[in-house]
Image (cartoon, rainbow, N blue to C red; front, side, top):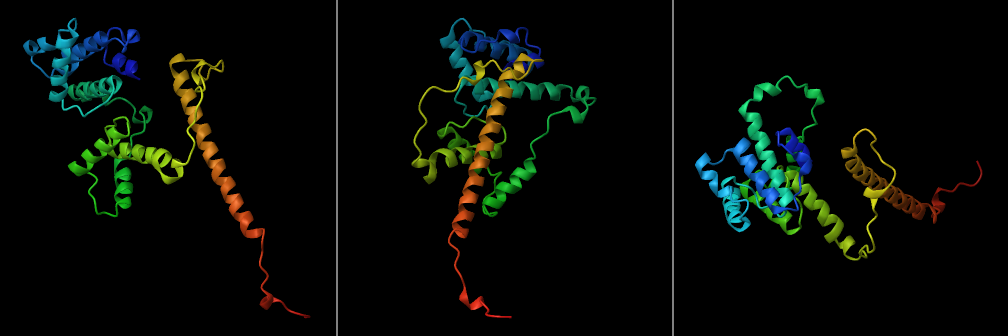
Length: 247
């Protein structure tokens, strides 16, 4: 996804992206600032040009993140994803008219913020404003403590936090034995999902595993329901008051 965003922004070599190299990461940040973001004046960008001196560049990068009002993000990939999203927004705002001809039916479905907000508001019984700055800051802090990745919509991030709590910290999960062993190498199988585009193969494999997990959870709920019904019908009680003799 990062490579796709860089390609959309016109980055010269998106296919050669190597985020394990901090110098390459610094070069991408510098290119985004020079070509797309332009947070600083040209003469002030010199502090970001010290890509050969990573220690000096790191100090400049921390200031740059603060000037961009970047939220607290844990990993380099999350930081780059946020900077790319910021650059894409600025690119759109520079000339929104050029995107008006794009058919809305071909675009990805948008997250219904109003529906999510109403759902969360009902959970809190209207006693908490889900758009309050303190509430948003609390969601971000809790997500950081649980290592939940950043999301621009704090309500979506809150749903992810709730899922992590349910699956890992809830009373039912406390007695669950941790899964040990070697992870299943689903990315190295021979059953290629997408023949037309190799870049789609890994995401489609992940989606397929998520679907299998969802079906397993559904089957578990079905089995629990069957057991509950069997417990009710296996030991019926006779009410003799309803009995009649003769006709």
